[in-house]
Length: 319
Image 1 (tube, one colour):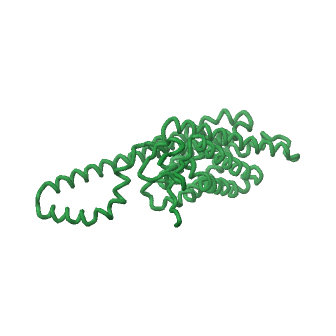
Image 2 (cartoon, one colour):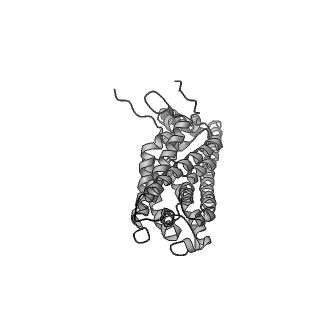
Image 3 (cartoon, rainbow, N blue to C red):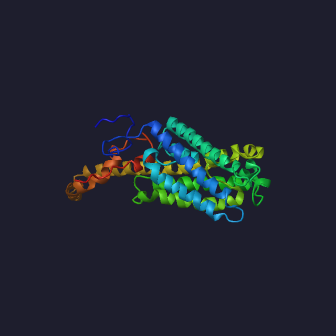
């Protein structure tokens, strides 16, 4: 079946949709930009108007629920990253190419900036808020004197590394092909993000999302841009750690499968009665086992975004 846009498949599954259409790069970038805009509007807008210092729970819940809603709505198009840290984790894990990852991050930054600009315009229209930039300071990531509890740079750095690593690990684990609970990925990622935001708000509005940190810094006081480097470096490190761990798991699984195959070949060539009985058993089970063996033999290595393939799983047609 031909497709309108050439996107290399990553496994044996057929393209999504009744007509086999696979979203092109522009469609995926649009989904990433719009999803990130939604995350910023909800994740920054709710705390802006609910005083997060006195009541941080609504802001954390809004951020987590926005992630879940965005993944459910747009994940089937782009894979549902909406976060440069998650995109970098997928890159390190070998699930997305360098060019596509760079384009994703660019789209995420555009969407985040657009969302923050919309919020800034709303703040300017509120008569009781004389300085919109000062209001943005209350939700902008910072450390030291700009942290709610005066957390040092080292403390915020460690929290961002740890939080980004955990968030990326949840995303990679939930969207893995072998995960039987993969349909719950949006809920797992959203809950994990909400829990981390609850921690991050107390330490220094740590967003665990460089795009969101950049968007809020653009419309805050000058100190926000001076401290922005930390909220890029730390999530990148955390995402790299999680991506390397999952890539190591994949390599180890591949080596184990190869060793098992060699071991089976040796047993088959031994000519023993036990080997003959084993071969008969394999013949009887070959039809049932073909469905589980197909992904390992048909998968193309690192051809695309595995997370997008999960959301692009084919729907069963009704007669």
